[in-house]
Length: 274
Image (cartoon, rainbow, N blue to C red; front, top):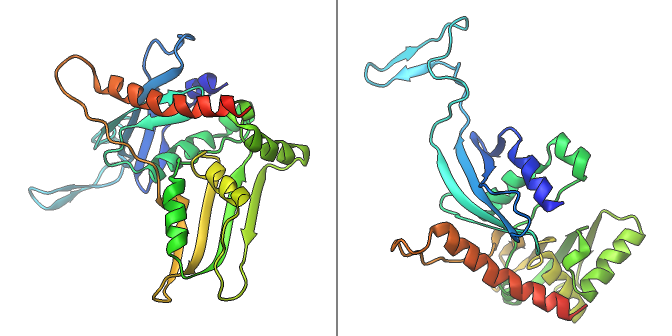
C-alpha cells in the first residue's frame, strides 16, 4: 500500500510547503522493483510565483506591466529557486529519510501532509497522517526541567499495525474496537505540582514521538516561573551523514545505509516483542 501511495503522490500537482515555497516529489527508476525494501527519489522545492504578475526591471528600476492577452514573460510551468532533496522511504517501518538542508523536518512533514490531503489520495487510501519522528529523550529531559506542570497532552493517530509491538498493538486495537480515529489525552496535575509520568504514560509518549504516531505537548513553568510550552514537533530527530566524494558511493547510498541501520533495529525490537 505504501509503494502505491508514493507512486500516486508523485503524480500529483505541487503542494505548499510554506508561504510561496512549494514542492513536488519524483521517484527514481526502477521504482517498481518489489525486491527493494525502500523507495528513493527527490523532493523538488521552488518558489511558486504567479508568472502573470507584474515584474520589476531592477536595472532601470521600472515596473514591467504584462498584457493579460500576451504570453507571460516566463512560462507558467517554469518555477525559480529550485532546491533538491534526496529522500529514501523504507516500506517496513514507514520511515522517510531525506537531505534536510534548508527544509526543516517540521516543514517537510507539513509538505507531505499537504500532498496527502489531496482528495484523490484520501478517496483511495483514506486519511494519511504524517508526523516527524521526534526524540523521546529530549521531551523527557525538558519535562524534568520544569518546576511545575500545567498540562500534558498526548495525541495518537490510528496507524497501520503491521510493525507495532504488543503494547502498541493493544492501544491501537482498543482504538479500532471503539471506532476511534484519533486518541487525545490531556492531564492536569494538582495545583503547583509536577506530573511524574508512569511507565504506561512514558510508553504512550514514546509511541507518539519516537514512533512517529502523533505528538506530545507540555505546558508548565520553569525555575524562573516563566511559562514554557514544550512540543515534540520542535524536537525532530536529525542525523549526520559523513559523505566522502571519493566516487565509491553516492550520497543516496549513504542515506540508504543510514536509514537501514536505524530502521532495522527498530523492526527487530518490535518483532521480539510480539
